[in-house]
Length: 171
Image 1 (cartoon, helix red, strand yellow):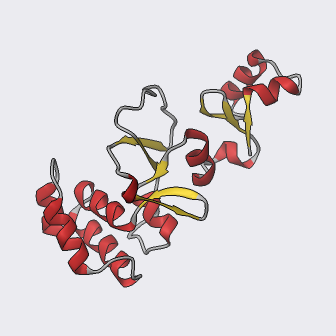
Image 2 (cartoon, one colour; image 1 turned 180 degrees about the horizontal axis):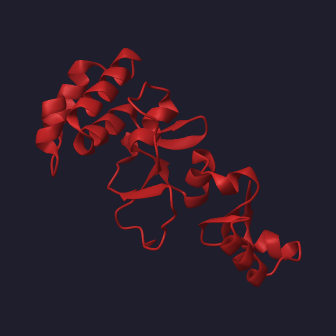
């Protein structure tokens, strides 16, 4: 579970003690003034990270959240924040913070967590993953009924920026 600095102080735990607990690995700092304790300190719970950091799940983490088949386990937690967000120091082992402009129509809530839409997730994966893995993941989204091949081809044609050729190859 998560504990804030204010909650810890209310229980008589000082900032100095919190710092010592983080250094010994007893708790994990997940955001400024937010700490994971217990089971959550040893692994990153996507729901808790998304809520604590006020970000959305993206890339393979979003695909796994949707329950689609992936070619391999997701080794790190992928989250997305606005490109102009001022948090430059959020570096935690096992979490990859992506910065991107995501329009509200590309964000949905799944089991109480903000996640990039299935189509946006597939486009992001096609842009950044190897072609064979991207094709497998996009196909899994389509088999699960999240979008059609035509919808993906249309979204690929509208995509811009780096990785556009890879997206079109996957489509």
